[in-house]
Structures are given as structure tokens and as C-alpha cells.
Amino acid sequence: MRPNDIDVLVSRSDAEKIIKVAREESSLRIVSPMEYREGDNIRGLYGRILVDTVNVDILADVKLRYRGKWLHLTYENLIPCTIEVALADEIPVRVPCPEIQAAADEALGRAERARVLKKLAARHTCGKELHQCLITR
Image (cartoon, rainbow, N blue to C red):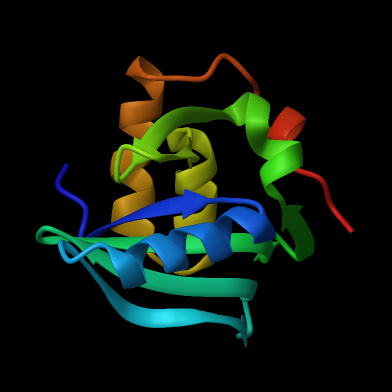
């Protein structure tokens, strides 16, 4: 599956570091500055940068409506359900496991993407059950 973008969940302080690096690094371009956004199914800090030809969506302190409940997806409570990668070879970020991404896509009405991610999750998992990663508020 080829995504249109990559979602990274970071702490608030790392979100600011990423935007600072994007301002200073000529190979990165800020597409959307970090700001609080609120929709019917998702709320939180959001920004987007372009790394080469890939859109990188940066999220912090996200709340996602999933099956009638609000899930609080923070960097801290999702660490066991993510994989660490380096952004711009400097900033460690965590990418959600396919199970988390599938739940988010399902909540956002992206049924086909959620279906593909669920298949991927059967082969590549962080070893946690989805309910262990999600905290409802």
C-alpha cells in the first residue's frame, strides 16, 4: 500500500522542534503550520511538512471519535503501540502500528484504507492488542 501521507504522533514540544527544523532545512517545506484543529471525529494539534515528495502529517495530543467514544491518543500513552523512526535524521518520532492507523481511518470514514491496514496488521504488529493502546475519556 502506498500512503498519500505519513502520520507521526509526537509530544507538543517535539512538534515545535519539527516545525523549527522544517523552517531551517531547505529540503523540508511547511505545508500547514502547527495549529489546533477541531472536527466532528478528530481534534488536536496538526501540521504538515513536505519531505522530498512525501507529505508528513504531524499530530500531537489527538482526540479521535471511535465507536461513539473519544480516544485520547497522546505520544506518551501510545509509545508501546508505535515504531520509532528518525525525521530529518535528527528528531525521533513514533509511527503508529497498523492497528492504530486502521482504527483512525475507520473512525474518519476511510473504510478501504482501514481494510488494507488491517491486512497489513496481521503481518506487522507491535505486539499489543488495540484495546491496550486506546484510552477513552
